[in-house]
Length: 406
Length: 150
Image 1 (cartoon, rainbow over the protein chains, first blue to last red):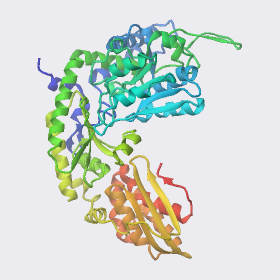
Image 2: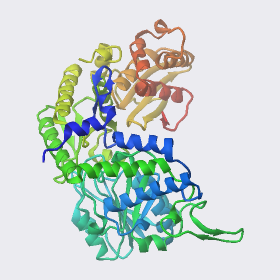
Image 3: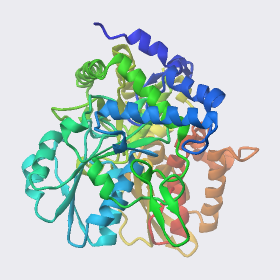
Image 4: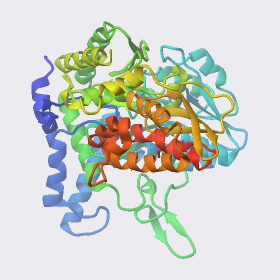
């Protein structure tokens, strides 16, 4: 079956926008994806017809909202093939999920002298929460190195695993480089020493089939807004036994069974980790986004994006002075690059004047920039609705701005 | 192509970006301050030589975009020979022309720096132009630590 690109593009109303009188070419998907009409409609319909607080009232609207909310949890469960809805915790985003694990699992299980392993290509959100925990506990953060292509050095990673290692927390797909890490092997090696593994799936989840049972990861975290859903919602997947043994995160309403001034008892999973009124509409929007992705199929999306990346890479390599940052063999739809003597910020402004949205900066991965000895990179990142024609517009823009800079 | 950018990227800016003036480490400086824009990674080190109230020499090192490089390059040219009070006054005027808060643009008061007034139309780039001047401000106030635009 051919990939229904025209239908998909028609499903995203923002793609009709003109930016500076030119058709929008949106290539900043690794920062956040645009939303299909069904997701936008899910918010409008909820607030127009079904909205009330969840898990509270006996009245009709509360029941409707609760049903829609819990149906979204079921969709997430199926989407990542978790065993149970109890393993799906709604949080604010991937960052919130990592912090949740650090502040609950981490605080309970990681002590002075223990070690946590991350990699050289982590986003700040998978560095800083562990640094904060290590500082508090006197634990040690170990960083598995990578090569210049942006690939994790597996022997060095394996050598870091030891009896003091209490957690491996690793990015599934790098936002700055596009590298897809060999997570199956990483998990196998860690599990051989009974070390749990957290995967930061913020970039991976929109681009590939993720099956948490097949991976056998212990935690998997991602954000909704990078998965064509609204901002303010994300998911922490955790194996049920781990989640049950973990202390609660925040205290408040919804996460308790009983409260007296002397003592409170906590709700069961997943509500134990969902204190306060959640992002109701955004969670329901996430459910709508997953429904939309399923209607196209993640395999088809992954194949389309792999084609875009191969084409973009081939075209980019023809441009003199363009250097691709991140050339891993296993790579998702991210083209990070620098141009000789032209700062990424200037590239970003110039491309914007042509209607092209890319990211210029350190991509919340300053250690990656330090590794490549660049202050920043320009990054084009692809999504299900991008086309080769848009990549042509990007490449022509790059050639023209090089000429302008002289 | 790039018609919308003519006000932002004037030839003077390309010139200073290609050949930044006073781009060297200063020996025997009186003031040295680092400026950093964590949003984009622009980093510069400003050196000043003072004779009483007068700035007798200025130089810089660092890497940044064309706007920030041109801004600091132009700044080091224009502040040489100015008193500290005059430089501060220029900073305030420059700030006004780049953030567009002034009712009447005092472009003539800033001389060559007027080429940077175009950033007013590009809010995301204002800090690129003002980083140099915030760093100068810190240097004149003799604040030793690094300064940041955030």
